[in-house]
Image 1 (tube, helix red, strand yellow):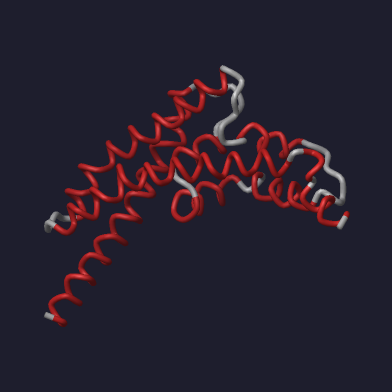
Image 2 (image 1 turned 45 degrees about the vertical axis):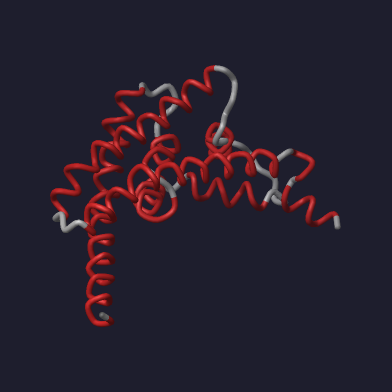
Length: 179
């Protein structure tokens, strides 16, 4: 089926690049959930307020996100693009052929930076990946941390603290109704 090969660009290595990046991103997400979300839900279960949880967990989440960015930079200096971010960035400027459908769709998304920040932070990605996608070429670690990571962490914590608090309250209410 040559049309599948054209669609996925199997000869060009697109599948290998994306699959490695997806596996790495999923591993980071699992660790992030264990470090950030589990303690946040536990604190809500123990009756802590949204403000208390926000103040306790935000520094942990910020440190985790900055640690992932630092690890990515360390690996990139050694020639390993663990998440395929440089490949994704190259698509923004690349002249693509008409049959490179997946790359063209990825380029379309990569060019919508505010969409990546808002929806990436809240639903699809974590602040670390958002930082790596949105930072400018040759931007320093500190500048990217202040310009992208910190606002992304705060935005995500405000949203997910409220969601988790409502979820825990809902489960407590359901237990009260059943019990």
